[in-house]
Length: 159
Image 1 (cartoon, one colour):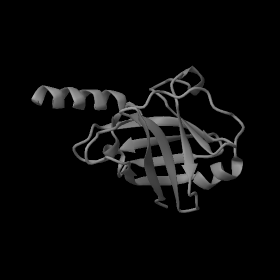
Image 2 (cartoon, rainbow, N blue to C red):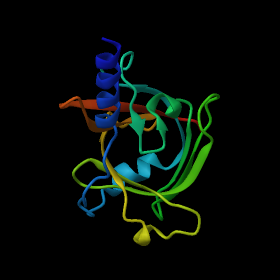
Image 3 (cartoon, rainbow, N blue to C red):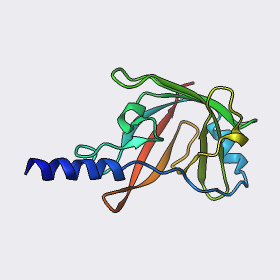
């Protein structure tokens, strides 16, 4: 019985990782993009079954490690930076390249040190939702055990 539970757990963990996204529309939604300008914090990360399953976000860390992470978005050149800040989670920070397209998709690339965005082939496409001047959600659609599930990152403006 223990072997079956262990095997089930390993299968769930293997399929709950997000694969990099294919190319997205590059037609920018300037209004949405300018509204994101500034400093933000992820105040919550939610998904069905979060008490039973772990999700590795952006191939970086457990999704819950993104709670409290800080994000800076610069809209005039589509750059920024982010950092994980939660105790007990891996230390991680990265420059980012991002934009919001006309399909309400938030396109994101994490850039390694000295790597230009056009050279970075891996990126992520999330849906932007409930956008106001003080908050917005990014929604990632992932496969957990053969079922599509939404991981919701709730952002709040910090200044």
